Length: 301
Image (cartoon, rainbow, N blue to C red; front, side, top):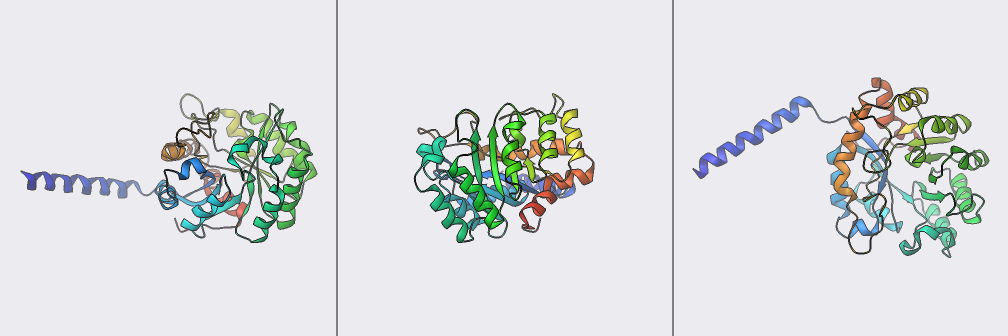
């Protein structure tokens, strides 16, 4: 009986493998918005995190961490295709007051000088909470991005695209990656910002149903407004998972962040709506735009 069960199990596994081969491997993608924070690293090692990215089909990944050194651990586990951004959240306790933490600019200068970081971010600039758009620490980070020629991932939280507009216009030499395409902003406002600032690209991370939402309708298809914007700016959008969860209760002190457990589900969500775009546009959004933006081909898919 035991031998019969073993034989049945072997047949089932063989069938599953054959089905997988028939369907083909998922198309490779770039995940341009990954986090590996202290309350994720507590329960998930960097090698396992990188293995999950591989399993999801990522051939290029961009990670920001609090504290920033953790991003280097993930990059070390995926050399050549996992890129680390330097994050100003050097003190997780004072995350929302990052611009008031002593020594942030000095640490940023040292981090960019050593060449181990591929950019700066994710930097939150929240209307009514801070920092101001003319804050000297924020402007110092933008000046560093311009000097080193590296991307700057910015997260703006505001009800209107014009909150970000003065920043991207003033710092035209900086290549911005606009996290979550403005978060709560509708597609028409995103289009206005992209039209006004050719130095801004947008990622569509956290536009999934478990975070901001709004990208797709009840049938899972792209909403018409988003489809129009993506077709109008096919070279300006990318995708990302933003594995932070629960999205509105981040940085628990009593339990770890479980966002990495949602990675596969989030990536499948993006793959579904990408099917509603012309094949060439989908390819750009899924992978080609990120390769061009970061100047890295990533690993072989």
